[in-house]
Image (tube, rainbow, N blue to C red; front, side, top):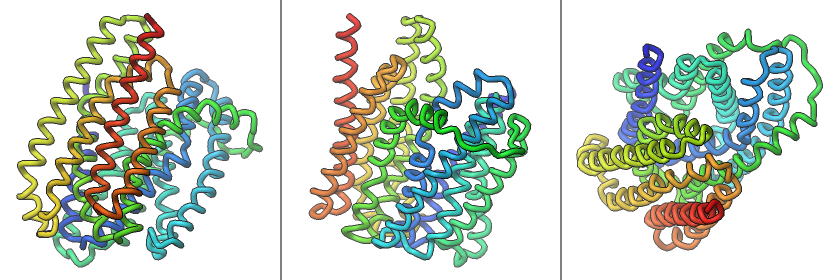
Length: 410
């Protein structure tokens, strides 16, 4: 019970930090700087998934299965070889983004450093979960994603002129490094890494093969909720990206609360009941998760709408007033997204990964096509409607696939 309380507190502090940073940056940064920062966050988010390739999904099962340090160490070393290769490849994409002026070239080397520590920190947190050190895992996540925000507040309230995209990235790097350093202390005894070995291409290729369905499904969704910022930047510049990101950050914060307060709580039980063939309890728990998710969505959405004028007044950005309708469009898209979760996990527990992958691909295609067509004419509203359309298509595809498998099982 004590461990659960600590985990809830750490998760809560991390989630609250995500909300605070939106307000803080909107208040002290210009629209252009806020847009530049949002593009950087989107790039880091997408890149982490590309480098990771969902490779951990198969390794987690193997780490649990094997007790010998030698075997786990061999798996980890091959994982490192794979991720280093993916990191180098992804660095090329950053170079391209800089050269086509999507991301400012002055951030290039800082982002390479940040991406390295962010990814390593994420993998360490996952390993800590695997070895049943959930408190340490949540602490690592808090240091990486929450602590720097809280420490930044007094610094910038005293001297707001210090706040810039560059200083934020440096703050972020320091805490990512700190999370890696602390995490390595707690996992070092689980592995023997004193002698480097040549990579085993057989092991690496096996891991890639197992990860492909999860990767394409996940990366499609991650790109679909971030691609609009890059398209907006291409057509209109960073200022309009900053305005859009302000509203989309509210959506992200709401989703984070739903995931932490509902999905992550019920999901382990949903998987357990399905595997045990306790289908009544499985359906009952799934309905509870759906009800709780919608309840949190309604409450947080009402709060965001009621407090929006007050938040805009506090950040002193009158231009945000001209685009308030965007929040309603994005909230509608989020409703479709959350509603699709009940069908998502029915497909997920049944190992229908190919259907989830197809649904994600279809939704991504809709979002990209819709953005390319609508953004040049509708600007920021084109991006918002594209998100709504993408989430609606995701919901409809998952419903269709669920009906298909229901017919197959009948």
